[in-house]
Image (cartoon, rainbow, N blue to C red; front, side, top):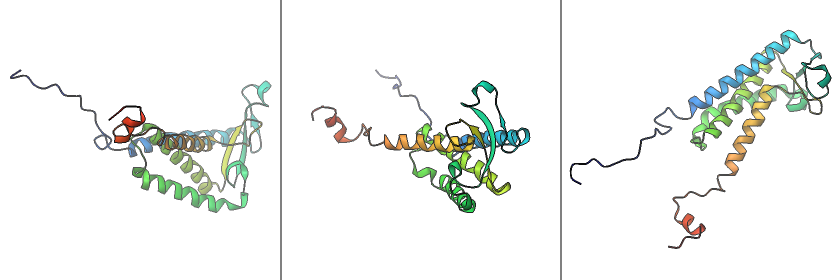
Length: 186
């Protein structure tokens, strides 16, 4: 019909129009870092070294807060290599910031995973730099004592691995072979 405007699809902003993935990564990292440092501050202020605190004493064997120091890697391994772990944390932080654009960061979960890893690495690096050790306090009883930064790093790596693993499982629907693999004919 003459004089009518064509109907078009709504415009959704792309990552390049919304500032890219870095603000999301930095935002998640900042929240993770702040939560990690706030909990460590509260533990150091309120629980003596090697001391424990429990909300419900009947559940002490299952969960409590126990303040310990850790100069090594996860679970206290390699305690004499604290300087090496500072270097590794610095490389991880620099790598995430420098190479985030080379990962499929259009997926929000990948941006969140990178932010969790960045915030966790920064939290433990600050501990090593300022205190000479990492403050650990989450005591689940059957597991070595850990902290919020450790949780963030493990969760971030798990999310990233899951999404990178599944990239091959979901072929691009625009590729010519994808219609054949779905049983469609030419």
